[in-house]
Image (cartoon, rainbow, N blue to C red; front, side, top):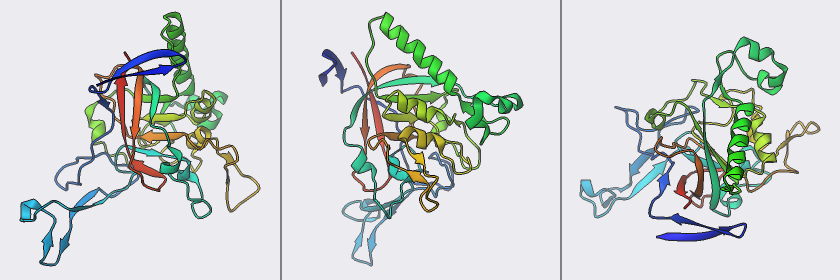
Length: 297
């Protein structure tokens, strides 16, 4: 099936029969081998057969009439997930959920590939990296704002020159090198690559409403609780006047989302795509998700 859609009075086409799934399939935990990515020391997901004494078993393999299972997982730690600003909100004051924040599901997205930079001792002395220097250590691998900005500027300039420019509100970052082991990588305690703290605010200024990447977090695994990329992207300000609630949500971008732990196969080339973000309707800050790309024809 093909669809036509209009952006700025120009018509484009996408073939919905040719999806490019950039989510990571989630399996039940396996003690004998690693089958899922994992971060922040999350327990493995479980798919448990439901039983009612001797009257019912939810497993056809065990003689039941149908399969009936209980699923247990941790969205932030067990694979591809999409989160809203409720991730940093005081939920006792206001229950902010991804189901409330993500109200449209189709976007134009740009996919870019970038290699993290290994931070040196000299970098930590550089005033250019003032925010980064507060959290980084030597040999950290970081996607730098200047590299991302340079790449986006070059691509956008080329789009204009080639008359192929399409406004996009979603950005997908694929880190290099890109290998299949990202689908099962164990990130906990490994200080994986992350984004320079200033990138969140930079993307908010560019009106990027949906950020997707193949890392467990946009921020450093341990960043002293700063969460600078999350806050900058959602426009969550530091509330210096209230010790009980340090976040100021007066300017928050309520409909902006972050999707982490994607996997964009190498066969998917950098470029502009139609993006569909699929989520279950759960009233929680983050849920397992299925982002799918379609080539723009």
